[in-house]
Image 1 (tube, rainbow, N blue to C red):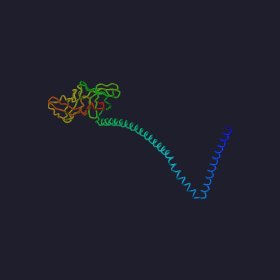
Image 2: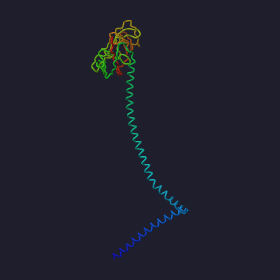
Image 3: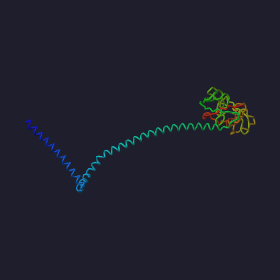
Image 4: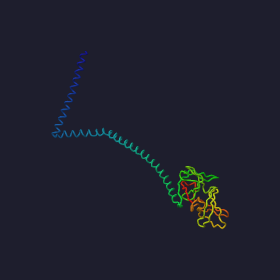
Length: 276
C-alpha cells in the first residue's frame, strides 16, 4: 500500500515538473515569436505591445506615487529643518546685535557728554583731569559727591570742578584713587563771584538748599533777576570767568542764585589744575 502511494506521489511530481518546464518553453517560444514578428513589422504585434503598455503605465504610475510622496515629504522635512536652524541662528544674531546696540548707545551718550565737556572755554595756565562722579553724598547737612580719581591722577585738594554747563564745586579731600568734592549748594561752600553785566563782586555762599545766595553786595547794588554770575578769580582757587548760575530772586537782604549745574544729573566732570 505504501509502495503504491509513493509511486502515485512520484507520478504527480513528475507531471508538475513537466508542466512547469513546458510553460517556460512556451513563454520563451512566444517571446521569440513576438520578437521576430516585431522585427518583421507585423502590425498585430505593435498593437499588442501598445495595449500592454497602456495597461502597464497606469499601474506603474500608481506604484510610483507612494515613492514620490515619500520623496516630497523628505524634501519638506529637510527644508523645515533648515528653516528652523536658520531661524535659531537669526534669533541669536539679533539678540547679539541688540546687546551691541545698547553698548553703542551707552558709548554714544558718554562720548557726547565728554565732547560737550571739551567745549568749556579753557583758562590760561590750567590743565584738566577728566573724572566721573560715582556717588552722590547729598543730604540735609552735606552736599558733596565722590570722584573716581585722586592724587594718582593729578587731582588734589582745593582744585575747582566743572561740568559742561559750568562750576560744580571744589575738591575738599583727595585720596590716591578717589576724591570728594563740595558742591556750590553746601553750607560750607564759598566762591568769589562777579555779576557778568554790572561787574559787582560778591561771595556765593551755600545754604544746603538748591539756591545759594550772594553775600557782601553793596547797598546800591543793581543786580537783577536773570543776570548771569561767573567766578571772579579772586583767591586763586577758581579761575576767572567760569559760569556759575543765574540770579533767581532779589529781595531786600537776600539775592539767590540758581546754579547752572545740577549735580544729580552730572556724570563726567573736569578737575582744573589751576596755576594762579
